Length: 88
Image 1: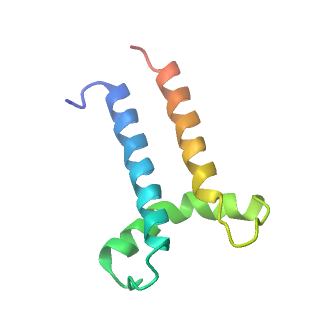
Image 2: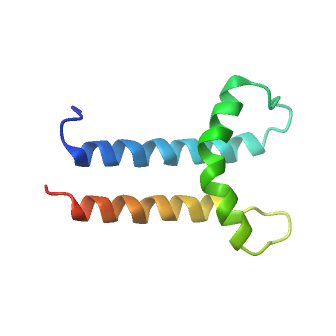
Image 3: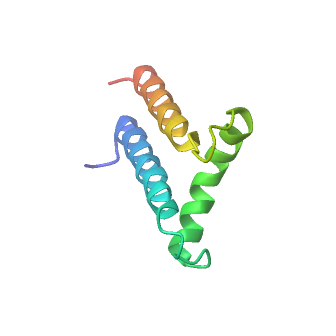
């Protein structure tokens, strides 16, 4: 995939965020991974600006954090809007 087409870039960025959010969810299942780990810090720095505002608005559901699911849906919607607006 050559990134000459803006649509390719939009798809690449969207895929990056899907993977980052999914990796963050997986990390929550392994509490022994130290937060000082560089990969963990990177994932938090990439995903927290997306997840934090969603958590502020989303009501609590016990111990379940549904913000990653909402974030992925928002990434999909934003990605589709960009793909619809960009010329093919």
